[in-house]
Amino acid sequence: GAVVSQHPSWVICKSGTSVKIECRSLDFQATTMFWYRQFPKQSLMLMATSNEGSKATYEQGVEKDKFLINHASLTLSTLTVTSAHPEDSSFYICSAPRTGKAFFGQGTRLTVV
Amino acid sequence: DAKTTQPTSMDCAEGRAANLPCNHSTISGNEYVYWYRQIHSQGPQYIIHGLKNNETNEMASLIITEDRKSSTLILPHATLRDTAVYYCIVGVGFGNEKLTFGTGTRLTIIP
Image (cartoon, rainbow over all chains, first blue to last red):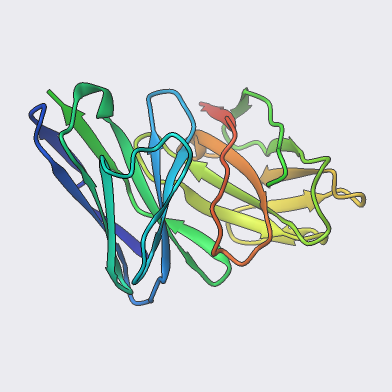
């Protein structure tokens, strides 16, 4: 069964609004989680590293004020896309490490209209 | 992270073995080879990983060359459900690291 759960699986929002995506580790603790973004027909691109109890680390070119990451507990990281625009429409995926491997959530399809 | 090179796409007949190659000529001595796959509109799924010995699990086999500069993922009896993009990634193996995904190989299983 899934060890990392993401919610929602898909969301449609209006331009200018904010959207929150949750990533939960099931039955294990994750002090670190990772957020990726994937555009159609492209590979996964790492956006940021989410650290429990401290600030997230963002990859070059990713706006930290637009993509807010909160890792308030050992089993939950959230990604909030603020003031979403159509160009933010993408597939967002989180991962958490366990037993030396990375486990991924099922992904969230965000469509901004 | 060491870079990997994979063919863009491959076809394989259903029921046959699918052999997916990966070059990782700059791999470091402490880096593992990981394979993940991504079925359309889903998150990546872990398949197998290895350091230098060949590995086998219920999903696949991993053959790593003696010089560790390349490897092959083998799906012994491919089914239609194996159609996916397969990613070969190298990393130090603790899981607590960011992964760099290349373009992967799009494997299509032909009925």
